[in-house]
Image (cartoon, rainbow, N blue to C red; front, side, top):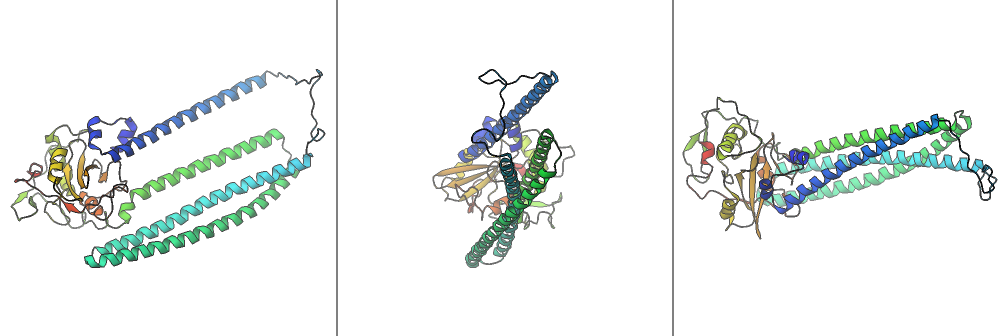
Length: 429
């Protein structure tokens, strides 16, 4: 959904109205980033075309074999002899300074590249270690009583502090190694360039061409390296929630829980009401439209795609989750949450996108977050990059982790049904 918005640079006004202020700001920021990226791409293309035109014009001018001499005040051809004019340095001194500067710049570039690689390795190493340790502690917290969780949290903070300290030491050690390598490399390059100057038989034009070719190759390698790093970072961010151990690692979605046509679903969370049998799979082939346009289409989508993925069910049971609601409006959701305490929430089926809306009660009012379910995962639209295997995984994850850093929203108390039959009954009929 987000990729489609950035591709078209347009968002439907009805969908925009469903977003809260923070989600709107994030979405507009991402659209602005896309505009800048496209502008830079056009500017780069224009610059390359202009350079090509200049080279073509220079080539045509050189083919004309036209020479024009610069003349001095006396009308004669102006001549300057290096080293004879006042303030000129000897050729040997100029050459020596140029070689030293080239060696220093080359060594600095190589040192910067080594440090970027070293820093990436250090960051990845300790980030993975912290993620693994936190995943282990979170898994243990599921097994212990509430009074032991505080001790587990203190232990987690202690381990994180130790890891940060080790990471800083590793960074300082890496910086020192890179600095030493930079000094050694500068000396090596200086000697090599000095020898190359003494034995070089190439003309000045050949040397300039070789230098341009080397810079072009170095730029291509740097772009390729940045592209690989960007792809790796995207994969790591996408899998961050899974590494925490509570998103898909603890889910039993694909372990021993399957829905048959004869399986029954409990429609009431607070009492053992009669079970409703799941409807058999439709014989017609389901093709999802580009967006929901009626309640019937939304119900069909939920039955075809969401029931097989156990959307709205409690973990490892056939009971509907207390926080799950049907196709209700924002106003109806706020009326249900009106007299509830801060942290109370519910999840309702959205009429704007293929997904859901999480309505949250805060101290000063309400917040609404869109949950994108158009792919094979569940994630908040424009707020959190984490992807979750099931809707229940997303809810359980944000009972421990805040949704946004600015709002600090934690899902504390589910808001149940107040009607009989429940508002989600049409989804399971």
